[in-house]
Length: 299
Image 1 (cartoon, rainbow, N blue to C red):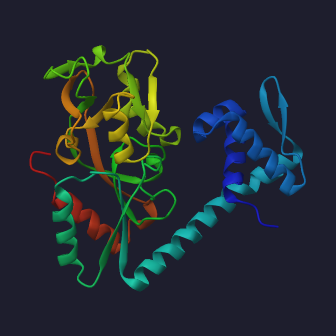
Image 2: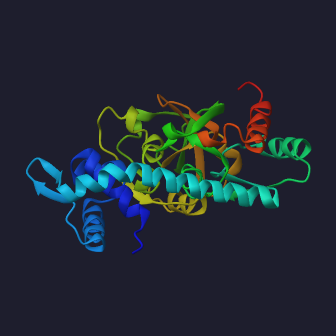
Image 3: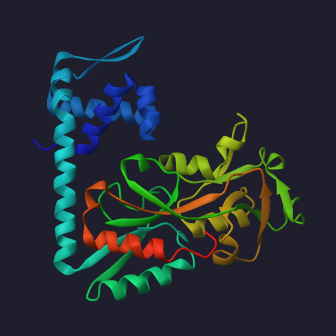
């Protein structure tokens, strides 16, 4: 019998959190979806894993027996999968580099050039990730190293080295009531509808909605987008506004959208990230050194 490891991870989250509500928040899925997945796992295994009560979800005897073995099983599978991916990359001398849109900005060509000189014969396979995957494939083992923006869910399980920091600005429709201003206080934007990344982006989504700067005021979501083009279209069409890195003024300039400086919001940080298991991977570490050695001036 084959069981999706995703279902096993969901069960671990429910067991550790003691209930569907907190586990769903941790996993960035809806409660009905998580409940359905747990039932699917129980059906596949032919045993009941949890008993629902007023205090949450309690493991059955069968569930307790399963949970005693799952962490090692999942960790072993993850290590095996990463080892297979890494071996394949070494065989063809390709380093898979994940990145979010504009992550390393103008530094990217210098990083690529430095790596090519350091590792002649190796190729960089650049893979752009959607905002729903802010680790740019690293947590799933789909990439070997990644250029990311912090914070993002799961970064505590990775090595993360900050490359530079840049201010955040706000992207507005050109006809917006505040578009003529050069500098806008975030307090004037709190009640505006915002364009958001998908919910599974977690802390990454929260950062770009400035949740920490709102003082508890709720976020109005005007639209949810996963790619830069859709994000730009949503803003231009008046569905909402959005915070953006200052470099967006160079990379994503387009008619119908203006970018303005914002007061009272923290900056954005760009980083290079890799798995702890690759601390001794010479090729990955060469790429990291190229990133650290080609930071933008002033960072």
